[in-house]
Image 1 (tube, rainbow, N blue to C red):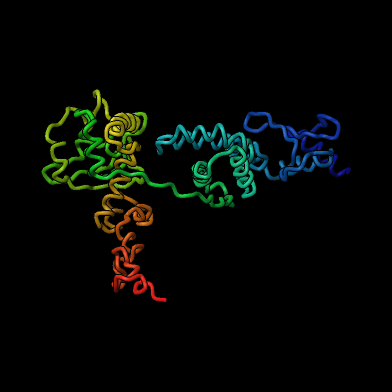
Image 2: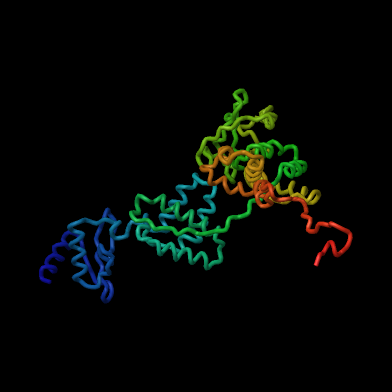
Amino acid sequence: MRYLSFGKNMLKDKGIHCRENRPGRWQVYFTHDGKQVHLQRDQNGHILKSEEAATHLMMYIDKNGYDPRVFGKDKSFQFDVAARTWAELTKKDTERWKERARFVEQLFVPSFGKLDIKTIKTIHIDQFIAHLQGKGFQPSYIRNILGDLRAFFRFNKKSIPDPPEFRKIETQEKVIRWLTMEEQDTVFQFLSKEHLPIFTFLRWYGCRLNEACGLLWENVFVEKGYLSLSTVVNRDGELKPFTKKKQLKIRPIIPEVEWIFDSPNGSEFVFTHKGKPYNSFTLYRLWKCANVKAHQKFDIPVINVYCATRHSFATQRLQLGFELSEVSAALGHASVEMTKRYAQYSQEKLAQVIRGIHTPFIDVQKPKLLEHKGDSKDEQFPR
């Protein structure tokens, strides 16, 4: 104790002090980079309950120096600070940044608060999932939320030596809604002539809505017979220099859409509405209006424009007999696995299997249950 008392007095001369700020609670304080630092816990996170513990901490700081990260004073690793920083830095990388920011403020921060992101474990993620389930969220929505949380940890992977694991959320695959070519033709009758170019393009190329909205004249090469889908317009009408998968998509200019590129409109965008590029909200609204009219007059199913174009494109091509790999390439899918979900809607071959049409001994006509060999009942039904 005499040694510790001598050491404490020596450290005071170096500007490192301690005091009992309340009964049974000690504090070490000093100046670092021109700012006053107050510590109530040692380098291992233990509360300073005695003068001896405070003196040991003073000696530790004198020997090793003060590192804010060791004592949790570096707020950049607090979850609330790190999550908000991540949402802001990735703002330009995703169309969903507003939803992502909402997840951060309404779900992530209230659950993880000021926890050090390096200390968050799998059990914390499990507790968060249970919290979401307790709020009555659907599994598909929970999966979307966890997708963003997982993206946050990937963003900070260099700072987190042991990131938490995310358990798989099982969800029922949704039924894909789509239109036949004839049903599309019917809805097109109710679209304004002004909007036919972009909807025609979506119908024939099956691309994402924002890719069609972001098509630039500089990426259309009529003489060479191809175009490039390499930019998108987000929901706010802003041009982004990359697609969802950051893939350059080169597509041929087919005869069915050549008329679209006959007369430039004076804008950098191929498709414009009221002098501005279309965005996905506008396309959803315009399609719904036409689709509802087609439904009222011809009983055409009412589905959203994404299903009516991209989903319909995929399903129609598979029903026409194109290979999965071919349709996958046209859609720009990262793998054929993503395209397989459309294959189950090609019902013609499956119907043949179910009916057994290809089995030679099956008579598809109504079977004759009784053979009439005579006119008398005795002959028909022998005893």
